[in-house]
Length: 485
Image (cartoon, rainbow, N blue to C red; front, side, top):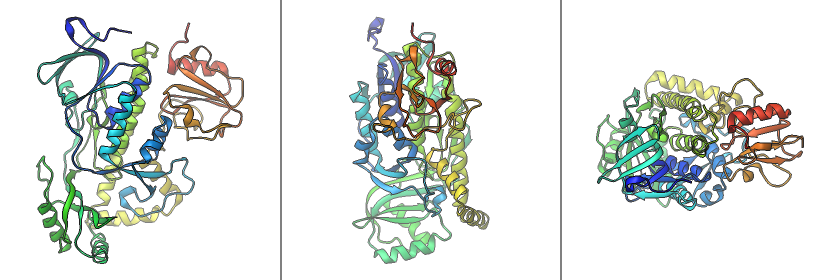
């Protein structure tokens, strides 16, 4: 272990993370599972004042279950059916989705961020609020990070999880190509004075042509309200209640008596993807690497899934056992996933447009989604359970995540809490051998598995499937480095 202080009195860490949102907090926890010294710097001193409800999709729920977090998180959320996600087209969930967690969990964003931060801190991550990164310099040995107020810190790696306007990305000089916002939408939660039946009838009428318009009841007179803005205002602050009233009257002819807002916000359809996710010892994750419209509710999930992919790879680099190219697989695997999300949100926004052409395409897609295969394909895309990393030739399992399968005793994800690899063996003949300091072993002939044996990475994706020990050893070397002496 290195000393926690560098010469000259500067604190030194293995990894400094800029930003303690969902991606930053998740990454900190993943690194701490491998005893990496982590500091998270969050510029805000207090959690967000508005309480936006976000949705955890199936793959994110699986990842939380893999780390033993799901029960704790689910207490604070509300289950909803896994349906109607793609462009808000009302279709039921496909039958027999390949997951033990086939639902959406709605949860207030400050709550999920708080739970993830608490988890990271409980594992030993240092988290400092009210600290703003203003600059950094990297060299062969690490990164020197400058904070507002003149403090300087030293780390072996810096990760920018600091959002769409990422300071780290800008200072790194990484391009953020894409499209600026063309449309803006107002979104908020507030009380509605009009009778529920009147609201429902009007919304049913208006939503025939305006797909970015709805008032959805939460109960107790509180509604989620979404209404198109007049244009791209370019204002940084949140809208006012009067803005909502004005737009509701313009589109529906009434403001429904809205009052007492819980939170108000606006979002655009800007769509951008960082040119690269890594430059030397500095990396990007979450909204710092990609932004897109919130349609389909994929943004938070995409960032959390970035962190699960990056965490074990960066830890392996720091612990000294990473194969040469392992850290580069983070960009190779995650950037195409983000590009696909950007494309599907572009498509969804087109399908919400009120013009005759997009409405015709929407009607056609609505018909096509009556085919089970189409509905399933779009559901797996939105919820990320269809993600398959390109790991080369091999069985269909290769590169895919493995569902939470039944074991002779318990379930698979209960064996993945510590963020290590796993050899799940039905043959009773195979073993991780000299890699057992990084990879666990479970011999279970009863495992509900479509392969004799699989090698699982710490993020739950299948790195190998087969029945030959020599072949397994080659893939252990590929993903987990040289065997221990």
